[in-house]
Length: 567
Image (cartoon, rainbow, N blue to C red):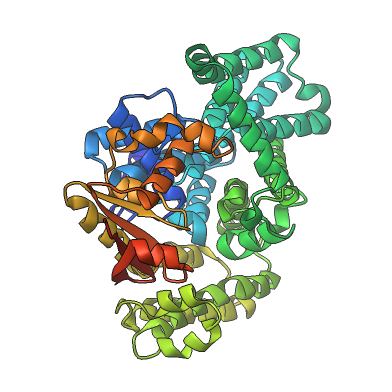
């Protein structure tokens, strides 16, 4: 076995140990995780792998690639949380191997290792590949497409044929489109255009190579868009593209955030990489030359392209800027590499932003479990008294013992001691800081996140599972949106066919899921032979008519379970 193969095998085993254990240890989070998992479940139930569905109606918000990956894992491992999150764990294993390959090939062995450490040893990236959301796979494809454009530029500078790299650029960009949509073409295209301005003729592919790019894009994207249009017409594709415009315009109000939102997200959630990358966000390190200098240019282009796009767009969610984590980790890894090989020293002035970015997070996870324990949670209740739902969430269950903050306290003490020593010049290498964050991220996933999930939704999901186990029992929600009833209720297509289906589109012409909405109205307002249970939030303003039709059966955390009174 060659040394290179042995290293990649070690990375693969290490990444698997990092990302796969405990994937199924707690419920999927509503909305995004359950939303995608439910679409994958419905693919298996219906056998229709060509179109994404929710409630057995077309769901045009997302393309199908990630859903296909989830459905494939569910086919092998069953319909459960582990299978829903496994595609991202596999993407994590692939990503860390790619990071090492790129670092070693263009700079050196140690940069490859530090690139991995800087990514896996930063707070949010440490948890990222253990989720069931789309973005880790999307980011992998976008990064691979940008890397292929970089390799093509290197070949052009040597006056060699680069057509394979342009084909792969189109392929990976197309796969990214099939994962998340047109934003893939926007990001990859802007990075490529930026390099054309920066490098001039050295980055100009020529018209034949551009033709290869568009051919690869056409074939990849057409494998889905073309088949969908051929089978069902243009309606689905039109709605899919229209929804992308809605996202860009920020018409989903609760997604809208101020322009500096992602700056804060990156500073706090990608620490310490966000801090150690800072010296190279605007310039190359003086010691980088040749391919390394060009690679730095690509990393900066990718970082600023993503950050600017998602800062301009009104719709903002934490993981939208997660693609920035890769170039940040590369730059932070270079800082570790340069310090380790004594090519440059790590500036001690970074101790202040390290303190500001890491201490608040560590302090929060130290204090929060103590305040959430049964003995102390009433301290927080007065601050939430105007929010009935939040207060009920806080006071429900006996989940926190207070001891859960002890590992965070140890982590906090380590940070403070290490940063003090770094500021004083006693220690010079930030490598231990990344290892500490890597372990801290595992603690968050194993200890904290399962309790957060139970606090927020554990009781209501258990209630859904219990209710739907009973034969002919229909469970629905009222006045709040959830995908948990569909996924954890194991709903079947025949449950969505009834008298309401005949006029659903006419009765709800502007609704994205007219049959599902019509079904809810029918269940609420018409007699049925089934046992009907309705779940509402505790702050649902039930009127007299509702009380005449339903009686409260029990409380499930901050939710109420109501039973329908049949005449």
